[in-house]
Image 1 (tube, rainbow, N blue to C red):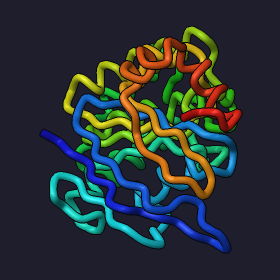
Image 2: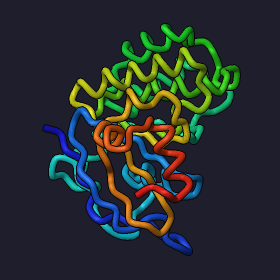
Image 3: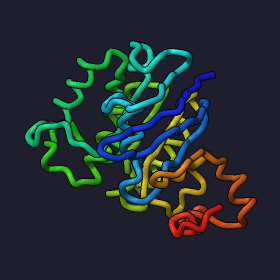
Image 4: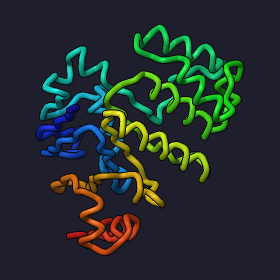
Length: 234
């Protein structure tokens, strides 16, 4: 059973972004990280991926520390940062992934990209913002990792594309994956997230099972989020 352990982590710049955050996720869980801008949604993913250092706390995967080779090879991260050159073709990007990541399944990435009508000869600068997100998703999924981190994956997608990505995520969660999604997109996410983490500045936060919370509140995720955003959530 794959298990991600977040132990009392905190991140501070001039002031704390989040602190004393702890939770455990097992394979099959899809965690939605929600909160207002500036509460640390992206920072949490950056810290888990190792792109930013924690101020305090530790992160483990299957009893392997974050600085271990096992941990690092278990992470895929669909970030909002663009790492590709404007004139790079999709084919060149796929070659880069093949060189950098030994377990990268290029055929799987190409298959998904073709379903989205994105082809090897296209240049990065020619793609719409939504298509760029799709390239990142296809490439990161094809790394075959056990942990998937996604930062605002729905922001530039149309309705049908959101449905397709949600289907991909649900399928991945059934394949021993642990998935964490930071998003401001709440519409129609009730059927995706198994758990949610509401982030609030300078306040203790914990993950909650979404189905149990919806039953308790008798509300949709959107309604619960609006209540939380108004600081009336108990």
